[in-house]
Amino acid sequence: MANNKQQIKRVRTDLKRKQANMIVKSSLKRAVKKVEVAVQENDRLKAQEALQLANKKLDKSLAKGVHHKNFVARHKSRLSKLVNTLEA
Image (tube, rainbow, N blue to C red; front, side, top):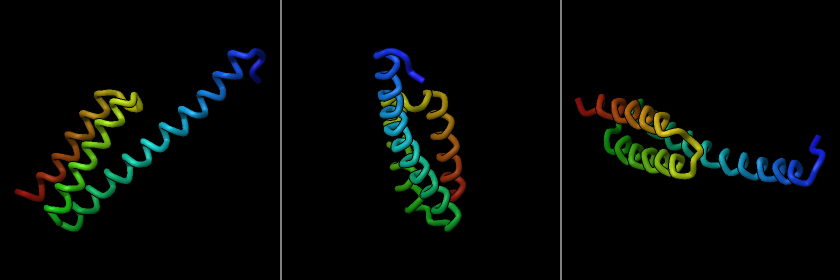
């Protein structure tokens, strides 16, 4: 339990940041899932559009400090590789 004013404020701000981060993370998960579903359906055009959206969400999560740059780079690479399998 928080004992002083600063600790109480930190608890409040931590909860707000956690909620904001969860929104960004869940939005990113939905975007990645759209790419994976499009790849499973062998729909190249839909997969490329979903990939652009997912890359945008990844960049935004990096800019907001939700994810580390290596996490973003790894996911972009994996998704791109997945979409490129359709074109081959």
